[in-house]
Amino acid sequence: MSTIQPKAVPAPALSVLFSREEIQERVTQIGQQIDADYKGQSVVLVGVLKGAAIFLADLARSISVECTFDFVAVSSYGKGLNSSGAVKLIKDLDQSVEGRNVIVVEDILDTGITLGFLHQMFARHRPKSLRIAALLDKPSRRIQKISADYVGFSIPNQFVVGYGMDYAERFRNLPEICIMPPDFPE
Ligand code: 5GP
Ligand code: MG
Ligand code: MG
Image (tube, rainbow, N blue to C red; front, side, top):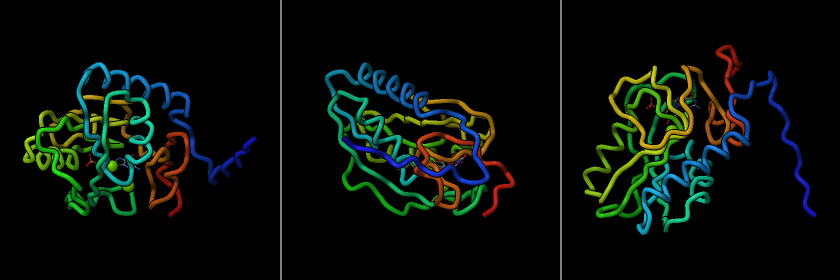
């Protein structure tokens, strides 16, 4: 029999936006939709490090069609809450995705600058198809015109952490998605 050590709640407490059950239910639904859309085919899930790592891990296990993984890393928000506006590729794909069904797996579609950059970059590989799965979408923040084909939840303009998403690299391991209060200490 195995036991788990409950995780300490960070202080001050963070309010839960989506529980682990809500996340799991939604991720399972997206997996089923991907199975229906790619029946009889295979897909490459391209995770955007590090925020999408946990979403990709759960999504991949909700998918039955043949699938492989790859990962890219881009510079984004640095330590705090604000974007620098510039995207830099830090880690490229390990393998070309030419002729493959690519699903870019991202934690949050916010201004759209990151996914706009990545979409353009992957399109140059001439994949068979190119879609985006974003766990969260903040449509009110969009600067670049881009939308996700699969969206977990649309949320208002709040900064969230947990389930892979960080604040200065912290809180990625929270199983829930929580709201980060604007006055949270560094
Ligand atoms: P975008 O380029 O669309 O503005 O945002 C890109 C990235 O910023 C997201 O993939 C995510 O990594 C980060 N980001 C945007 N909003 C949030 C948020 O509320 N919480 C966290 N932790 N990261 C965010
Ligand atoms: Mg991200
Ligand atoms: Mg971050």
